[in-house]
Amino acid sequence: MTTGATPTTPTTAEALRARTRELLAAHPPAGTGRTEFLRARFDAGLAWVHYPEGLGGLGAPRSLQSVVDAELEAAGAPDNDPRRIGIGLGMAAPTILAYGTEEQKRRFLRPLWVGEEVWCQLFSEPGAGSDLAALATRAVLDEDAGEWTVDGQKVWTSSAHNARWGILVARTDPALPKHQGITYFLCDMHDPGVEVRPLRQITGEAEFNEVFLTGVRIPDTHRLGAVGEGWAVARTTLMNERVSIGGMRIPREGGMIAPVAAAWRERPELRTHALHQRLLELWVEAEVARLTGERLRQQLAAGQPGPEGSGMKLTFARLNQEISGLEVELLGEEGLLYEDWTMRRPELVDFTGRDAGYRYLRAKGNSIEGGTSEILLNIVAERVLGLPPEPRDDKDLAWKDLSR
Image 1: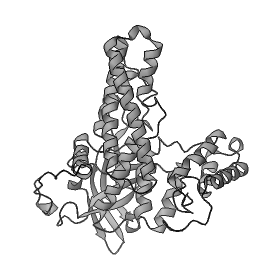
Image 2 (image 1 turned 45 degrees about the horizontal axis):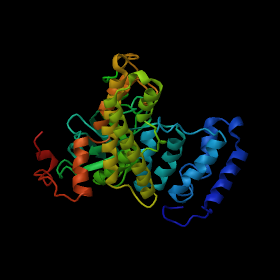
Image 3 (image 1 turned 30 degrees about the horizontal axis):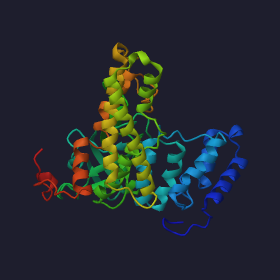
Image 4 (image 1 turned 90 degrees about the vertical axis):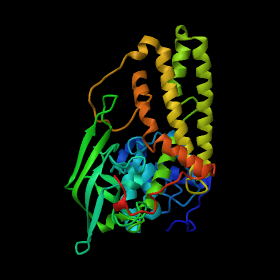
């Protein structure tokens, strides 16, 4: 079945409940291995119900996913650990669905969703962070072999040390303007020539990495989209990235505000009038952001993500930094303590499971990852508010002629 075709399976809420119960009867969570259950769930079309049949979905409205999730949670079924595979779920999967061949969709989506293959994002470079289109990583086609040879360096690559696959943008025609000479690839992180080095952060950990690509051979069958159209494909990834970061579903008083509110209730000796006023203001802002994220997810059910996700990601970064700062101040001397500076390479970022010092330091990265706040402000100004864009004198110049 192709995207947009009429589904052959009923997709009402009651039909999905019945289908979920059939899955649970055939694969009882208590007696079924986690991977086996997740594979069966994908094959039953209950992984992401809005995807096409045969690709983990049923062509159903996105809003009905909550019906399936509620049934499975009540039965104690395992999830696919979405925090560990967030880049695959939130960025790689929707891009592969939009631009991939049928072979690519069937090869990559199932192990991606089940969590058998972790993904990373090979976009930013030392000389191309905020201005991603200025990237210099080169990909040269060997037509006889049907392969591309890739050389370059990527940086700030989350989960590269755990990843099997990476979504990669590389320059394939330096004679074209910078936005036009880019192509998008799926890179096997286990291939010869891929070197991953840790980047130790202010937290003491190294969840980020720099990746060196030296003579990496990527088959043309792992190209996503047409040659030279990588910027359009990358924009799909970036829009989904910002929605996945800023529009995460959290319960009321969840996320970063939760430990602050808990400390306020449990430690009355820490309270002051000024801190109370700041907590009330941030609690309200966090709730507004949560409800706005819910509205954004409802809009997504009717179409593709738009620039509104940039606004949500902006809010996410600012609130995390202000809330974590309030928590450190509330705890006083305790807030200056730090749990552990051990160098680790974690599989995921755990904001609420660590101490206040970790949250405060890690939140500093929120205004950089997923698009810097400065760039996102430009996107909101131009694409949401309709303000005139900033003058640019490099958009029509060949990339090779740009000063660097």
